[in-house]
Length: 306
Picture 1 (cartoon, one colour):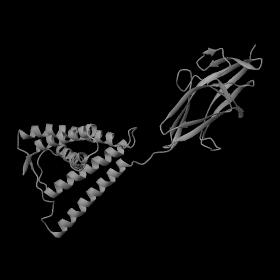
Picture 2 (tube, rainbow, N blue to C red):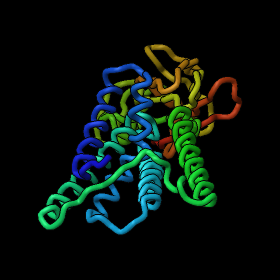
Picture 3 (tube, one colour):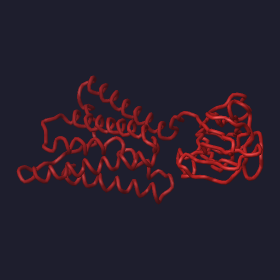
């Protein structure tokens, strides 16, 4: 049975579009498997080969099919490798989107080049249902079996990677923000009178008549499991109290967060000793750990009121 190569490319584009629509509107069914196998194993390599070599080459059928499968696997590997270093990661939806985009782009290039070539010669591709090399020698049959095993082994590895991607590093985000919601403009100078803070000056020159310097404290759980956090404050290495929601406490917490959940609130900090270059340090503890998982610090000057 013969198909014009131009029609084959258009059929590939239509089936790729149907796969995207099935992912959006149809729950996981056998339809995805039926459309997904040629989508992974055949379409990327066929359109890429057609874009690279739009003319009919003197190439054996076995070599042509192996080249298509090889190019498909190469495209899958490189797209997966690239996605691994993006915020989307190797997940089903972004992987399908980028592979479909690859197929559409290479299809467009192939169609453009082949339409120009058709003005000179007619290009057709012939497909049969027999396995490549199966009618040849025993060696050809053995090579065919090995190639098929390699293709499905690679496909199985890819499916497993997409279904159960490797979990990245386990960590907790810990940060402080200033008055402008950015990582600056922290309280930098405190004025004390009668043993109490009565004025606070921030990095940007803003002055507040207040007994507390304020920052926004943030924690994001990226531990891939539920976590319970607590925060302690030291000034010049000595324990100090944190003001949160109008309450003074030695320890802020427990703050219980699920994976990916964020806690962000304003806290108040007030020193009780005069002196310049005092180190204000916030220590994040995870669970019952006696050692902080992370620390943040900034510097303040504390002066006596005139």
